[in-house]
Length: 224
Ligand SMILES: [Fe+2]
Image 1 (cartoon, rainbow, N blue to C red):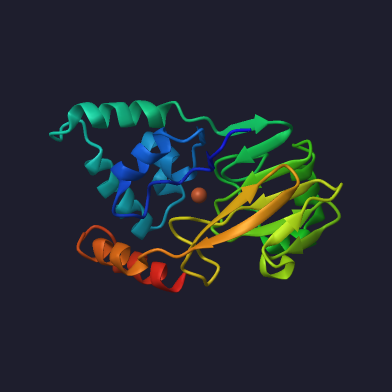
Image 2 (image 1 turned 60 degrees about the vertical axis):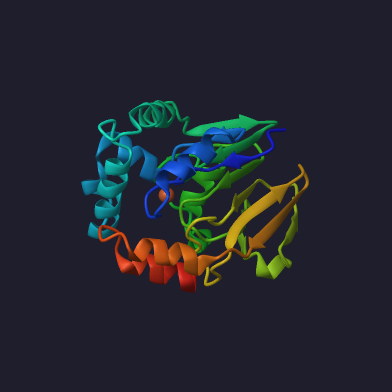
């Protein structure tokens, strides 16, 4: 089993895009999220707010081949351009957004009340799907049950029903908890992990970059 799978959006809002890309290069599997797609295609106007567009424009400038670290930036673009949008391993599907729209579709807790949408999504994979994109961790089962990590005490044993797991977000959690969020998976159990780190130091880095909206620093501190 691949040791580490990154579900995308490792750039976009943060002050260390080069470092994040370089880390993603070394992982077992890294997938493309909507922010990497926007960097590559410049389509952000259609789907990003002004704040996100400005941070993407700044991120793009950090990665310019005209910068002194030209060679490193060229290989970063090559890596971004080769990112896959899905990964399947041992019958498990990994995507950034959703199985039917891997880069852009959100799966929300309220979707258990939109069974048509969720059934269409469940039809697109075999057993388990890991996703991100909403930045909020959670569990959806095919019988239209939604569970938060808290409701399962951060440990979830897979059932026979097909299951969607949102792994949350390392870089910008939005579940009210500023700690970095990710999951461990051994084929049977999903463990939601919360990792303390120096959130204030990252927020401070954001604040000194004029192109990054201070709101991006504030939201890190509140996990919203
Ligand atoms: Fe996303």
